[in-house]
Picture (tube, helix red, strand yellow):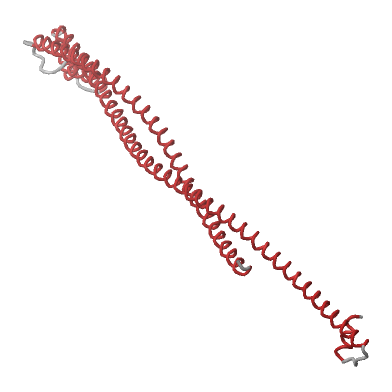
Length: 297
């Protein structure tokens, strides 16, 4: 193969080598970009798994609280039921005790009426007859209270039990509201868990796709490296061959030049010999013969 052709081929392979190097660089950048995204996705998955664990702990804690509160509500409802049963009995006793009495109002109101009249007598200026009338009224009302002493006790008992029932009902209602609040919080945590698990599933699909792309890029890079190796070997061989050809050509030119000089020397010697023969015979020298003789000197 001629040096020119070999040099041309070496140049073409060198261009292919440069293209492969650029291709390799681009592939490496793409692989690193995908790999970074893959690592970020893995990190997101780990963070969301931690979040799910935290949410489950919080949900389970709330669920346990709701369970305990339901037990408390059950206990309070039973207490309330017992108190209501006692209240019914107390009201029944109060009703029986009030039968036949002339009191048409409750004892608390009657007591307040007495206190109001007494306060009026103490603070207001009035005639003796008016004061006497009010004192008589107080006496009558107090008599009513005294006559209904047993009924009064029963009424106070019923009132106390009614107060206890109100307190028990309030406690049960408060616990019920707390149950609803905790249950709503637990449900919210549960919904967050479901949503986060769905996000994790989506991220795992993305992770799988990115891992596949990374593997594909690695395979492509390995292939390019193989091609680069082959091209480098080819360029190296062609470069060695080219240098060898150039050295051969140089040596050939050197030998050709040397052969030419030797040929010219030989020709001069032959011409000189002829001229010398011509001189011996007494021949006449030409201008060319003189130039040959000068070249020999």
